[in-house]
Length: 391
Image 1 (tube, rainbow, N blue to C red):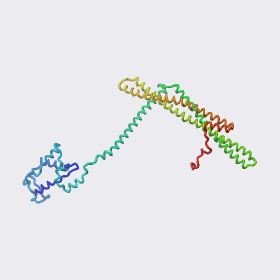
Image 2 (cartoon, rainbow, N blue to C red; image 1 turned 45 degrees about the horizontal axis):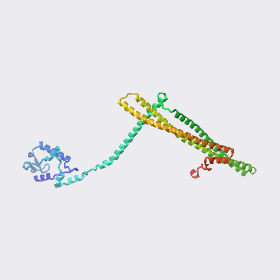
Image 3 (cartoon, rainbow, N blue to C red; image 1 turned 135 degrees about the vertical axis):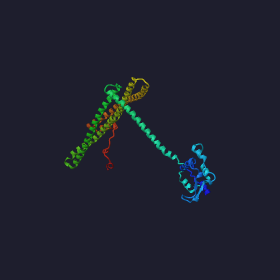
Image 4 (cartoon, rainbow, N blue to C red; image 1 turned 60 degrees about the vertical axis):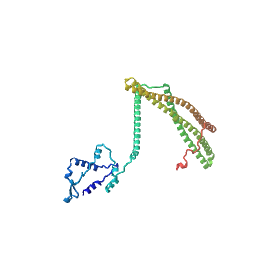
């Protein structure tokens, strides 16, 4: 029976984990209990081994004094490993000669793989980290932009109120300011000319439509009234001729209105937009100039010198911007004046010749005027939508 017990102890199951180490939580607990028994437990010579189950016969109790040699062998490598003084033995190489039982085989089969493929975690986390860093970069950029805008707005508002109340100085170019005032006044007058010309176009268009309707009515009555056929016929022919000349004059007036509209709402407006940018740059330049002057009269410690240097850089940046826009405004005002004279000379001559020829009844002179200024008339009914567009 002793041999059977020793053979069972020799064929104990040695479970192997995924790292090749035979130690488990149960083994550690067992070895700790075993150490405690060896240090302070009962004497093995006073114990007995029960071969049967609990409550078995007395003949099944064998005194341990009859067993030669110790029943338990203490492994010194275990204590070395617990103290960290020796490398872990290769249990897998030692257990090659041991045939695992069915429970050990199933336990090894249920364990996870040896290599959990950590690269999948990195491949999934890298895009999220990059997107998070990009979001933080955009947020920081927006915050810096908002900070710069707030500082610039505060300085410009402060400078504007200082100028309004007469406490701050203002950079003024008297000659350029006079030209800007003339341009604004001229634009207002040209806008009035444009508004009146459009009203004239609408009224004259209604008059031409009325003449056409009246000529059609006279022609219809000349067919239905034999006794007044000649009289109705003469008037119908006259109204048709007036309607034709009216359409020619209407084309000249529309060309005049279109040219004035381009001059006022595009050319002049573009120059005024540049002037507005110039005025904003002038306000910013004066604001940073006042800020630099205020810092220059203050203390000259290290922190103040850093702020003065930054203010000097900002002052130079806005000074360059102001001078560049000042030059742009001067050039645009010069070219605008030349373009205005050229355009208005042509359009006023066209308007005069066309109106004079129309009211003089000179159809040939009216048509010649339109050819002289390259005015092309739209065919009748071209403004009306086609039957496809009406559907």
